Length: 66
Ligand code: SF4
Ligand code: SF4
Image (cartoon, rainbow, N blue to C red; front, side):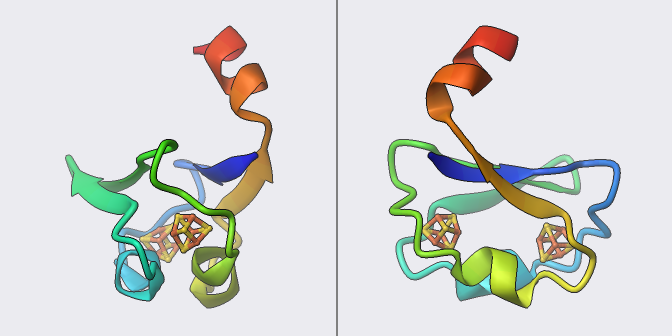
């Protein structure tokens, strides 16, 4: 599992970026992108997101879906 950004809900506030203890989230074209190899599944980003734009799902599933 790894944090996953639901881009349609994201408002680009960067709270998740500031909350991540391992700098696994970076901004790319006004949207946060999670480095899935760095993410340690602490859920800090999900807790600070006020827009429900972060969820967790299997990395395998993500690879399958692109
Ligand atoms: S779950 Fe934790 S480590 Fe992973 S991106 Fe969110 S804040 Fe960073
Ligand atoms: S905290 Fe939520 S709304 Fe803000 S940039 Fe991160 S994912 Fe987007």
